Image 1 (cartoon, rainbow, N blue to C red):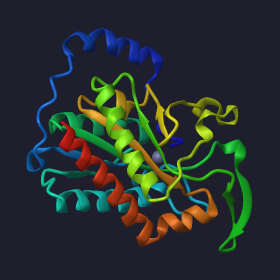
Image 2 (image 1 turned 180 degrees about the horizontal axis):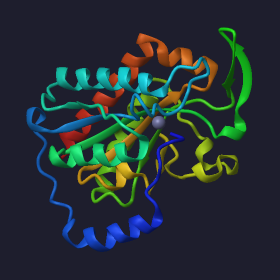
Image 3 (image 1 turned 60 degrees about the vertical axis):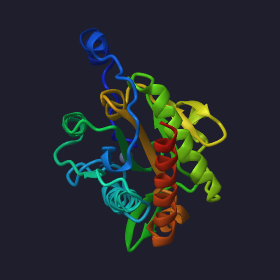
Image 4 (image 1 turned 135 degrees about the vertical axis):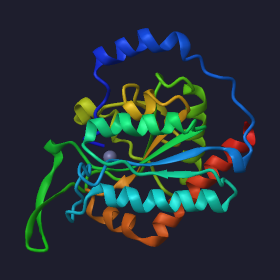
Length: 254
Ligand SMILES: [Zn+2]
């Protein structure tokens, strides 16, 4: 999450002035699985890879593997128009590129996949594979983020809750630290304390997408145990299944 730059407040204000009047949310269309356009966004890029795990593996790789699995799972459950979105280039331009790609594709749903770390001040050092490396075992769990600036905030929140509930049903717990002062500028408002949905208004990929949008931090890769779990095929299947079940429920209710 750390290098996911929020939109600058000046830019947001400017965008609001220009965009808001013509960005009226269209009325939700009925969800037909084969036609429902879901964009599964791989967080970060190969060049700007996001966080580094406790064992020095880039977040981008974790995001890519899980997002690919989520895409396959959604397709196998009838969402034939699901698309995996991989973006290249530097961090900040890539955020606008992915939003542009989703909006151009007239996505009905934007789902961004990430893996979590901690603020730098919480990092501790250990030796892995002969190299001095960073870790923090203090926090673990997944978390879901939505933006009030998204034109479909309520719908996005509903979807995030459905995914969160499915993850909880699988016995997974959410990362509760985002409300704590120790998180500093990463501190967030908890919108659903049962299943771990947070509010992150300024996040580019959530606020600039015209469709409903949810960001999933699937788990912490800076936590040494959880990194290993996130690497396991079993955990990846569990999460992909929970996401697909949440999206399926979301589709049924529309
Ligand atoms: Zn990330």
